[in-house]
Image 1 (tube, rainbow, N blue to C red):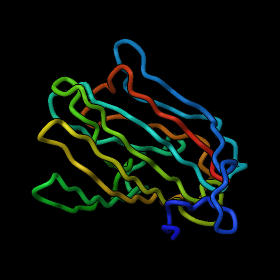
Image 2: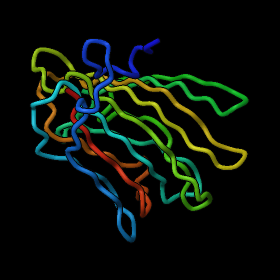
Image 3: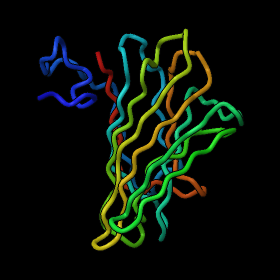
Length: 185
């Protein structure tokens, strides 16, 4: 049985190892980084996927923030987020934003565990529609942690040629965090 979305890049229902092409990988160096950027993204794929592990330089969890094409204009983004922590669940949405706020980065100064996530940017090169983003990820802190499922909208029809990721609250992303950008056929 094929699960919809898991094999979204399958050809004729068959899983092919040639459907994902590595475009760029970034590993955060010593001292951390205020943001991670992928630029000059070719428009030759159907979708983009970012796979990452990351922690924030903070004693509390932080959200992973996404901006497309360097656009920080308030009102160009909206997002939805479902979050569970093993005992409670919550949901929320925001509109009128200058970025999409997703998934939790683990609190890097109090936990050695990094959060893990997958970000899909769907139909990123199609200039006839707004862009949709979905995120699945979470982190475990030995008795604490969260899992999150999010969706976002960039209300612009421009092809996505750059993606910037950062932590909310002007907190650096910790050393050894890693982000890999793939093109999906």
